[in-house]
Amino acid sequence: MEFPPCPNSLKSIQHFLKLAQEHDSRDIVIAYWARLYALQIGLKASSQSAEETQLLLAIMDWLEQMKKTHADNEAITNDIAAQAHIENYALKLFLYADKQDREENFGKNVVKAYYSSGVLYDILLTFGELSEEALHNRKYAKYKAAYIHNCLKNGETPIPGPFPDDESAELNGESPAGVKDDAGTNVTAPEEPSTDSQSDNVEPSSPAPQTTPPTVEEVLNNPNKLPSPPVEEEKPGGFEPYVPPAQPNAAIFQPAVPVHITPDQMITAQKYCKYAGSALNYDDVKTAIENLQKALKLLTTGAE
Image (cartoon, rainbow, N blue to C red):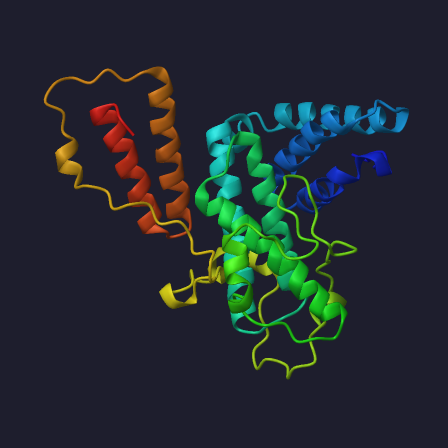
């Protein structure tokens, strides 16, 4: 489907529409929720000009069409499944970018991965407030996307991994110049980084790495290329992934008397089970166990 051009008055949704376009043939779930979030932001920002209305109506029509065409796709029709799908996708991109960054495999592919990860975490606001882990990853991804982009643009060699000098500033909520954290706000790169063949070859002035990192597309289309999560000492300084407190042994959750579970609690338990299943798709056993324990505790005690 051809969409009308995005007017300058709706510039805040351009990067969501760009992400959707890139995923129309790669991942319809990402394309669907990116356009839905763009629509939500666009309706709030719209001054109801003819150009704005034409675009927003076209997005509405496309969303309705996709919902009918993919009625059997749970990640489009069910918010819980959709949230789990997008979270896993965003984390996959984040881990890829972080690994290449630490290995000093700088290039626009890394900028693209960080950038897209940050946009995906914005889209997750569709489902409510972000988790602590998502907030950390979102800020760090946008920070690194802008930083590496500007280094490559100026012919400078980026510092790999976390920034020791800026760690305290980040923890205090002070973003680097030009990087904003509000939903729908783009990083300062003058144009969204691309992943074409020419972009892949853009490198800083330092010596080229000995191995060629996989492209973003290869990582997204081949789960076997997903890099392993960073080991403890490799976690981004000031942005360590959130680790929930240790869960008690499941055996203590056996209730002495029947527990009444409300419909909302049942939905929450289903959400944890969905997260666990999605985590197993990426061989993340630890996260799967944590979410199953949460579901078990809720169902057996009625408390989270």
